[in-house]
Length: 180
Image (cartoon, rainbow, N blue to C red; front, side, top):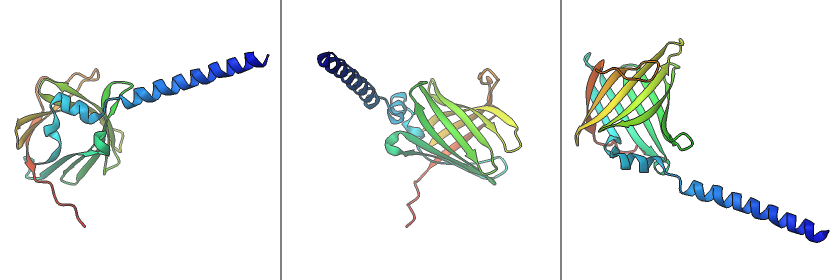
């Protein structure tokens, strides 16, 4: 009787050890966001960008690596609007996800996808007054110091309009020194 209990206990422990090994070895092999961005050729997107709106307002856009390239933080500022986002890879759904909050109480969520040489964010934003806007932002590299940003309308099925509502060209800025 003791041999049967010992054998059963040993089998359970081996099973648990196998499960732990499989789950931990899978997690260590998991791709991180930095790898996906590099493989897609979108490293150029990271950095400080600046543009001027048609009204003459400065538009500041910053993409910054965080957490050993598992996260990109985004800052967008223009006029009296400010948006902050976290961009990360969600392996269970094989998606690059963006979560956004703004200084007016709005929130947003989106999915990043490559489309040829463009990095496209399909984004849904809900303002503090519950108005929801769906839009797509196509980022493309013009040259080492210039990025084109196209804003498209997005249908409820996630399809982007054929032509952008507007296009902005951002110029790369030197990174500002950290304040002490």
